[in-house]
Length: 227
Image 1 (cartoon, rainbow, N blue to C red):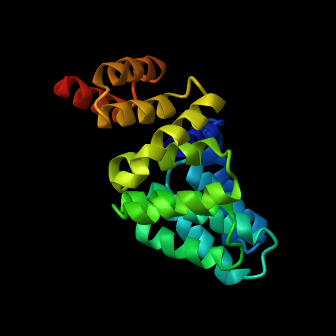
Image 2 (image 1 turned 60 degrees about the horizontal axis):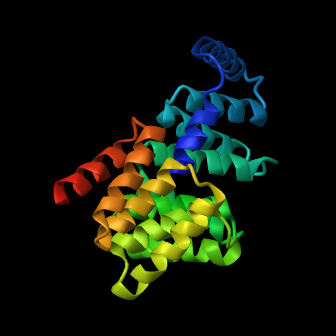
């Protein structure tokens, strides 16, 4: 899930901070003059998110939902709130929001992925494993969940699940052979089963592809320490 979140972050910040602030000021003026539509509130929340002001993003969405409970773009608005809660590290609150939305659409892949991420961050690893298993039942070739499922069962699954980790991570790598997060998972798996030299080669490749990734650096240190 971490790679998914990083991709989302990179895709979001495609405008300058100056333009973001300018747009926020315009939208706030519309609200103060009672000329704002629900779309303006939604737009303001998005721009607060752009500015990484997750608290104001969440509060703006809550005002929007209270004033306009029948807003046409309700689903996307609530998903923005959930993502903001996650970036704000309010994982329990995000989980509760997600569970409510899943009552409407139990097979929403984005919501399920976010829920698995929240469970992982709360050290509820078996719940996260179960959610990724559900995602793969819905979308068997989803590379991110193949990777996350393999990673979690490698570190936190039962011994019977470990033998499946290689199958799932190799399926992810077949789709994206140079994805550093997937290579990192494969290295963690190799280290777990005692193939330390191969694990070292794989994780060094991952680090070359993403040299600032803290998770990869930490896993490399673990592998080197053990070898």
